[in-house]
Length: 271
Ligand SMILES: [Zn+2]
Ligand SMILES: [Zn+2]
Picture 1 (cartoon, rainbow, N blue to C red):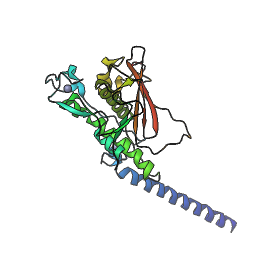
Picture 2 (tube, helix red, strand yellow; picture 1 turned 90 degrees about the vertical axis):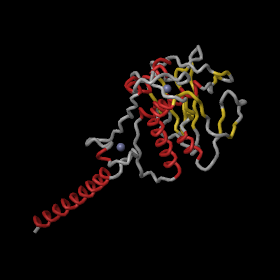
Picture 3 (tube, protein in one colour; picture 1 turned 60 degrees about the vertical axis):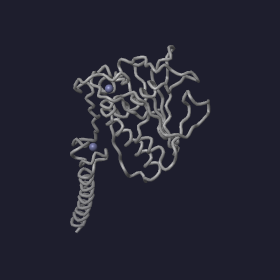
Picture 4 (cartoon, rainbow, N blue to C red; picture 1 turned 120 degrees about the vertical axis):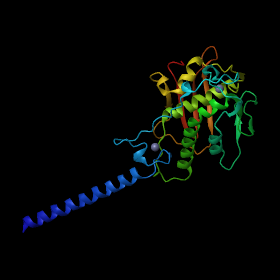
């Protein structure tokens, strides 16, 4: 009798475990067969789940593999020899990101050298002519990645209860910030104090390689979150950007805040 009861108890415990394992497996299968959280539109198991864990590969831009077509003088990638005219109007901060930041409101800007200290101006997002049509379009995967990052931050802060996951390549976000820094620099929109910077980076010659392939970022270089556990994130739709310069006023690194997410991007090579 006691044996039977013990066996029965063991059996029901075993059944419960099976049920729990079955439920976990069903949930896992549903996630793997559902849409990938990187927003590619593909099924997760055919996209960023590699059988062991999650990994979003960085975008392959192929800048060095573009066929030779010529140079557009104002394009900062002209040394690649693969420009296609005309020079295009490039948003310094990607248009899609500006739209997420604006929401239903207006776009405003401050801290640029052509505004008074402390002045904020409501205006359309800034554009500059620093890339030809071909090279502007070649960098568009980085814009898409940044858009997904900002849209996810906004969604988490304003709508989600915390159950949705998003995955993106950190290398793409790093390269988007470098691209944004380059556009802001060559359009002479950066200043130290009230003094306009020349726009030169201390390692300008490394920038095309770094944009093209994350493997050209030296060890230790990259985007670092500078927030600590317990820091409060405010729902403030903004993108702040501050260049960090050396004694020649050349840009070595930069600090940025995306919404409330503070980070620094630095490179041993740039430093
Ligand atoms: Zn994916
Ligand atoms: Zn070009």
